Image 1 (cartoon, rainbow, N blue to C red):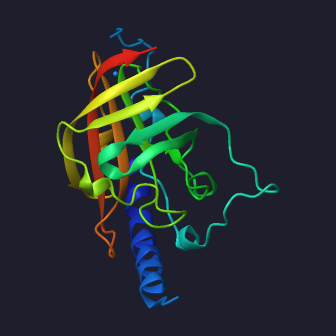
Image 2: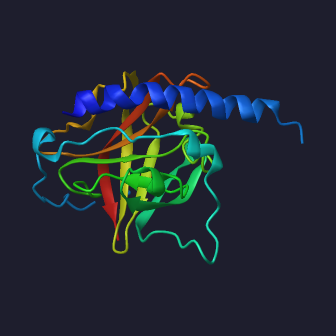
Length: 202
């Protein structure tokens, strides 16, 4: 069950992230209607918040021999200093360790329901490091190969690692959810930013 999975990884996440913080601190050196694609229910899709471990701070930078996974678009959140961050599928360790935003397999931009993705706060370049600077009414943009989807932030909250309700969304609207760990350095909770689709540009 999602809650059991999340509960089991919460401890490991907190320890690993605390270790990462210690290591760092010791170093001196936008209008079209949304598409309507059915999305599985939470129970059938069994989504979970991403599993992060001690390897997050040690993830190698992609090289010619370590190719980046295929991207499905880019994410821009000006308030969080995120500009054209690549989005790929998956929230497993190897995907998030690339430094990209990992999107859940059952979601997509502009679709009804929730387009959810996660990213590291510190490890792998910390793509979501400044997500805590996002406020209500700030903008989030997702560009795919055909459209630019503009969302308006409607909620910013902290939840427990076992709270998967943040992955639920309305059946008649398109939302985006960005997830990362908080606070630094304990990472005992999840920072969740929710936005609602306001327009679509070519």
